[in-house]
Length: 347
Ligand SMILES: Cc1cc2nc3c(=O)[nH]c(=O)nc-3n(C[C@H](O)[C@H](O)[C@H](O)COP(=O)(O)O)c2cc1C
Image (tube, rainbow, N blue to C red):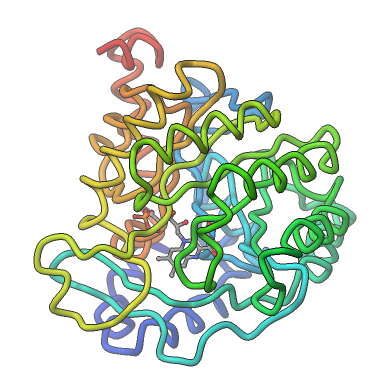
């Protein structure tokens, strides 16, 4: 029903400016739990990631639901985990519009949203209301944290700590996002010294909540290895790789817009960088793979490389609300045929 509806409206949505389409779809989110039916992943797909039980290996990547208003809808659509945010300590409008662009033939997006969000305190209130109403999902909900634009990098630690303070106990995991390309200077926080200072403060402040670090695909391999080492030394629970790229592989450069590129054109770079991250982590912590996943084969490839789980964003925009349930159904069928999920991963 929901999928048929999406097939019907997708051509119309894709004729609208990308952010207008996004806003329109978001108005319908409260209906999703009623329309979706049962899309809970087959129990054969359950994964434990940093001590948290994911319903299935495909989670929602950060950025789609910056304010946590669709958590029930994402659960109903079958996501194995839900990452909300990025939120910043201070509410901020983000960059001027237009700031989100489709590359339809390539199945990519370019965005320069710039962390438009209502702030960490507002997200905390939304998540608290959900919990109080008994609507907390059966899958983990992570809060992705970024730096407020007006806060200079020297004061970044305090800014992130304000977000942690607001959200501690309200989210199942945190992500320190230092890899979005649309906040000036943010990616410099991936360098050894500022990163060690930041994570050295955030991890203890998060107390028992696991903290992940999300990395950019534009870092050189050595810088990625260094960031992984700093993260693990600081006690991070895992790594998420990758964020969007400022590079323009293939034909994507013809859309003359600055910002982060995601979706199918990001996939090769994400996979390359993911390999570097997985090698550097060497099994010491879970790695969540993200970048250009559209099919069960795409997801399986990242999982077979050693990712504990994967996330999608752009694939979901192009393929629609049925994508996640479809990926999980296919993975479950293959896991049953192989005699279990681990057997499927061994291939
Ligand atoms: C419009 C848009 C906004 C995004 N916003 C965020 C964000 O706020 N925080 C973040 O960590 N990643 C953000 N991302 C990056 C995604 O979470 C993901 O890492 C990236 O898009 C690669 O995955 P994909 O190819 O499946 O989209 C955003 C991506 C898009 C397309």
